[in-house]
Image 1 (cartoon, rainbow, N blue to C red):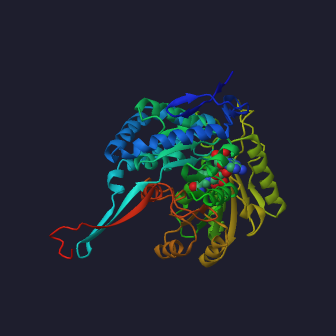
Image 2: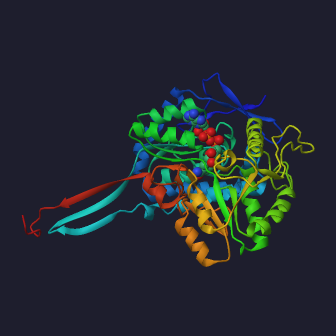
Length: 490
Ligand code: NAD
């Protein structure tokens, strides 16, 4: 019988009272790994109350002491690094090296948040009028919650959690119900570092528990990462209740190749960007736009590298691409490929009906390349979230940028060229929050914000670095006068 996951509330593991559970499956084998409870709103309420109670004492704990828990957590994350990466591969399907990369970025965020004592310092102006001083201090917002997607079960909660707690907030994490096991393991580590009860809480569940977060009067801040449709819902419902909220949404990332791009580097990096994590990355490039001669120069090499990609179970050595998350997801992706064909695109590399020996029950696709995809068609504008490259062709960089800027999303845009002038123009004009110049996945380091524009982001401040510090603190401005004999106006 697979393990039934429990919630971590107020420093204790507690079984949910729900009768509704979902199966968490290994997408490479369909083996049931665990059963995740769809927790009840009353259980979220318990977590919110525990977090609110703990916050009173936690807020008064000096920042320099609060980060001692992060130092301990960092050591434990290093110690359990491989076990956590393997857990990600088992529940998400991505290959082990990608899972390691994900945990590395999670740890970088813990390291960066250890700088909070300086990062949350305020400002001071003496004598703004004679004998009067003014200063700004940063105080925690209170209880916050993070709602995570399935595709980075280890990293995404860490865009927020270390900053939230180091700045004196307490937090509730709601992982994706499809990949809840990695956070389950991470919370086992929280138990070991002896962080006070109620500072970090884990509540499993689906939309019902998410809505309970959005409506809960004790929760002051919400962060979300997931699809645009849900991001919009999160943003509007949480805002309606006066919460501060940031919601990262979906993407359809363009990447342009100029004829002067380095042939080998470009071919390898572009295929990695499109097919890494089986295309289930919010920074996966999806629309590959060749300019002029680049079409002739890059089409065949890209097809060759894509068709050689080794597909299989992510824990096996040499495998470069794992399965997609669910059978439904695979079916949806195959449907979209067919839609592309119906809309007039040509299948340059066929990835449907992939059967992997020994893994016949897995949700596998091989890389697919659709050539001559027309702007405005369904495949050109829909986030496929699978290993599908849509190739499009234009004649000039101006046309390419216009095409990019007509995209409703704005998560990432990349350019491959050896021309500094072209790269600068692109950086200047492309409407996206993360820009790659000869980089295929422009994922910001922990000390930069993870940006995102247009329908890829709802809010103002992003996760990671200083943005996270600002998001998790509220400013208080104090104007101060002390009537004393030396302050002569009194
Ligand atoms: P999703 O929107 O289906 O789910 C995300 C979270 O929202 C989950 O925790 C889920 O329980 C909850 N949820 C789902 N439906 C809900 C509803 N109707 N009401 C309330 N809550 C609901 O996303 P996913 O499939 O887990 O993740 C993939 C998506 O996330 C893609 O669109 C991808 O582009 C996006 N993503 C974006 C970024 C970014 O930084 N912009 C990063 C990673 C993933």
